[in-house]
Image 1 (cartoon, rainbow, N blue to C red):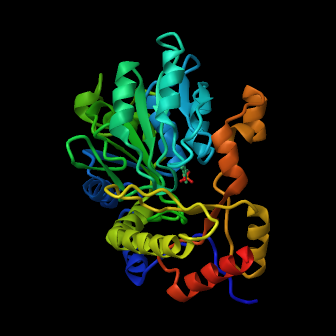
Image 2: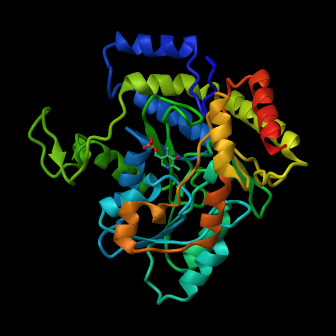
Length: 383
Ligand SMILES: *Cc1c(COP(=O)(O)O)cnc(C)c1O
């Protein structure tokens, strides 16, 4: 068969291409006006006070770990069901991760198990929590904030899957994923399978001015050129390196793509949700576990994950038909690097989920006809 349906796919418009072209021939191809413009527009979209764009979601996680002070004495709680990058950065900073199981319905970090873990450890054992808005499910960050405050922990939200998603807080207000109301920092990625893409790129959002300033410093070598912040000032050429930073900058060329993509973010999100609803309706009465949706909250549907008993056979069957699905994710504690580091561990809900999960094709340009074909093939398989 010559036609192939991937599980995810970017959508680049003519306007996107024009926006990039324009910057290519301008005076600035990196660190010009597009960087701040992208950051400001992103803050507006997400509802955070500040945004700092960086070269990838992983760079966003690394800088976040640094400014939160992760070091060899740090122990951090996170979920085994996420992309490894969510916790790799803790190890870049020589910290340790203590995994906690997922809730089998929301597929996100089970707050009750996190609370148990904290209650059963001496105060000061842990320094932070990394909840992940897995597949686009908006984690109730207000509840995590309350828990974090009780145990004096920082909160880093991995919102890569959930730009545009929200939950309703105690006061009845919409709280966008990654908006900085509750988490100290949140991070996003602009990899091609994500909601909006820059090819590569990432963002840290926060409402904390001090962390914002530190992030900007470390993004570019720890070097400051702001006269008022300097100890000495020898002249116009002068700069000071005050911290050991990195080159995690995002060029203007890619920021222009991000600005252009962001204009269609809401439209693309609505399309994802519509496709997810189509899947939900088609699978309602079948032997398939469909994603949990809370009526009042907005699921951002980065992934559409089903759970079935004979997952491997379904994966192989669909692949033969040209339908490419994926498994998100192999539990992190099962990855050889992590097994070597922490030994063999078991997390019942995560492992049960892993044995059954399959991410179906979901991206804005997926056509209804293609989706019908996918649904019919799944029905054929089940019969
Ligand atoms: C994509 C992703 C990342 C990493 O982002 P990159 O831009 O690829 O470095 C981190 N966490 C999650 C949950 C992701 O989906």
